[in-house]
Amino acid sequence: MSTERTVVRGGLVITAAEEIHADVLIEGSRVVALAAHESAVAESWTTGDARIVEAAGKYVIPGGVDAHTHMELPFGGTAASDTFETGTRAAAWGGTTTIVDFAVQSVGHSLRSGLDAWHAKADAQCAIDYAFHMILSDVNEDTLKEMDVLVEEGVTSFKLFMAYPGVFYSDDGQILRAMQRSAGNGGLIMMHAENGIAIDVLVQQALAAGHTDPRYHGEVRKALLEAEATHRAIQLARVAGSPLYVVHVSAEEALAELAQARDKGLNVFGETCPQYLFLSTDNLAEPGFEGAKYVCSTPLRPKEHQEALWRGLRTNDLQVVSTDHCPFCFTGQKDLGRGDFSKIPNGLPGVENRMDLLHQAVVDGRISRRRWIEIACATPARMFGLYPRKGTIAPGADADIVIYDPHAEQVVSAETHHMNVDYSAYEGKRLTGRVESVLSRGEPVITDRTYVGRAGHGQYTPRSTCQYLI
Ligand code: URP
Ligand code: ZN
Ligand code: ZN
Ligand code: ZN
Image (cartoon, rainbow, N blue to C red; front, side, top):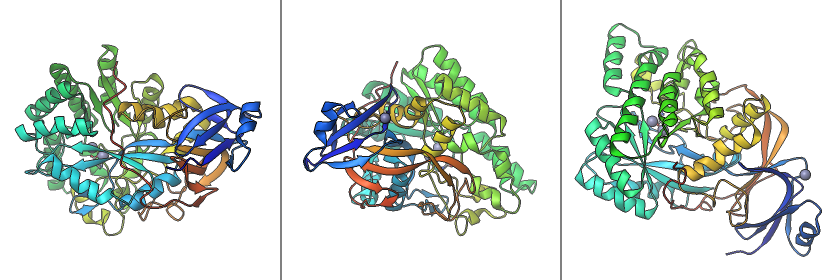
């Protein structure tokens, strides 16, 4: 391991806990110390052959932790268009230095074979560090036993689906059993909370009535069916005595279920995503087939829900903002659902946009700078057992550091983004703030807006169990 010395000098260091004008000393891959600008201690670091990263007038923040991505996910007869190589490079461009992606168990197969397959996709491809959750598609005796082994190995969270019957769906009995198992082994159950059985009935009725446009995707996947599933998941977790993390919360009614559970002091957590904070059913209703660009599940909601989600982020009823990055090209992939919205592959691109969009929320006065870092870096790291290696800037932490220019102006566009997808969900959006440079374990990945990283720098990172329990 290199013991090369790097000093990040002159910036405002922002963590979830504090904002301090400090220089940061990095040795090799780790942060070793912070000291006040121009203090004798900080001055002593810059002698010799230290590499100096100038950050005057900039923010010095922990690299983002995106705890919900789907690189290369097979879905709806196609596969997410970002590979681990292209997707992690785009993540770095957007100031994210760790992703937690979802390995998938196929029906009839073991967790091990699914995990091996995802390792094979990611191995030697990633520009930044990565870890895995496991999607459970087939909960049976063998699966339950394997969960224990995976937790020991550092795959400490398991996603279950109450939606997508015939694909990823688990029934309530399977869900309860997986929760009971995780109550014993320390795993965290992540839930896709939508009543998929009821939704499938509404899909068939909509199609039979000739309602085939993308906007019907939002109409059949009703907020009440997200709320109902969220409520059911919470009660099942209470019966099992397990913590619960609900992914991609989009409906105000579902958030109310989380808030009620948290008011009772339960270990129930919620994640939302930038698309639910910044986009709405207005996008799904864009004319022609444009709405297909915004098809994801849970679906985008009417604008009123956005205010509720922002409030949830302020009150900590929602703790994490992840992207659910699952890109499909408009041409050739979203296309599959022309004439039948149910065949549009579900998912939106966003891994590159998350840190900037949330910074815009800081600029707009919706959240504080420290809350920005908390929901995008620190809490996802704690929730998924990566803290304090990831998610903060402190002695001993990995030197995953972003130099962020809070005054730079940018216009989001597919013309300039780095994700391997032919459109941007935020095309034309003006944002204040932009990533300038990125270090991953002390190595430059982006330097003054030039990519200097490499596929294979990113390492697989086993995780401990949830560090966020009440
Ligand atoms: O539409 C989405 N969210 N696609 C990715 C799979 C999932 O349910 O998270
Ligand atoms: Zn300063
Ligand atoms: Zn999901
Ligand atoms: Zn997802």
